[in-house]
Length: 304
Ligand code: SAH
Image: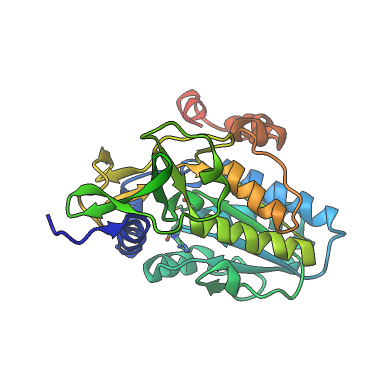
């Protein structure tokens, strides 16, 4: 009991900033690019298609938000270099990453793989706007801090963290946001990820002014919904989110509907969300796995 409740998003922001600065945060969870090279190859094929649809510009920013170990970008660049060398030569790689530890890991993963030096930014807002861009982000939005509002008709209360327990605090002025306009039953929780919505607005405005495409892959939902999704992984296992701050990975499901509406309101065209399996299948997942399996033992092919 501290008696000084901290708003949940502030707690989550601090805890995750510390978490991602550790030596190897990826000991606790595994992501798609770390499971198989095919994931990054298919996103490389997506980027190649998008670049051609843009008219094959001679310079393009290839941006990744939250690149982790750099595996996804490395796999994308390998595929692009093989099938579309002109895009490899055109691409200025930019990584949006706040963790100094992971920036070092990413630098090593991409050493010698890009036509020009890789650049890093702290936020998307810092990514320059000198030309067309293609952005990908896998399991990035789910790491951004959320606020949780509890319906206490006729108003809202907000979840805060007080030591090892949750507390509810008053909300002097509830944000004007679509999720809070939903008809939510008494006592239910609505989550609001303000940094994700700010990013959607920024991206939407960029897309309205210029040329670009952005692809976000994450756990989430795409319908007006309520309920809490905050979760923690500590040493590879689910844990109480308030234990081990800075040593557990905190995530929340992404509200794709709110994200999409914010980008649209700022001027972007949006598509989706679609299920990852359907998306990767349309990009040729089955054919690529069959091709890679040809040279493998039955066990390895089965794993793949
Ligand atoms: N995309 C990778 C890593 C996902 S983990 C993969 O699929 O394996 C989340 C990533 O987002 C990490 O690289 C983390 O350091 C980064 N990150 C988390 N919060 C961030 C923020 N607010 N700004 C920029 N990067 C952030």
